[in-house]
Image (cartoon, rainbow, N blue to C red; front, side, top):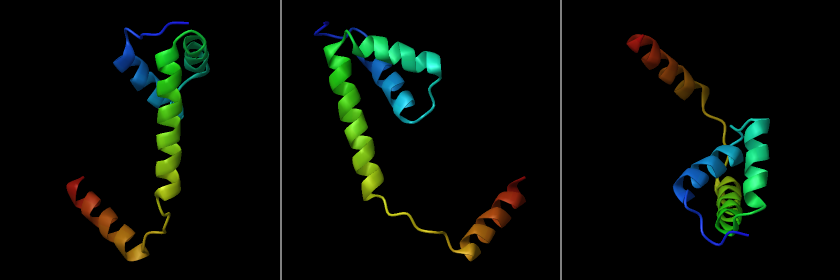
Length: 80
């Protein structure tokens, strides 16, 4: 098991992509192989996963008022 990661910033971006659901099956396989051998990446993965879960739980989901949606659509249409 590696105790240092020489590609930590790249690994962090990759972990975030996986946790955001933007990864392919090949990416998921690559992450799994990396997590089997790299202690810093294992810790980073668990930390990022926990942060994401905490943020999702803290965010209140509300419906946008229809008037606001229509106002935004109108403004976008004027820029097109």
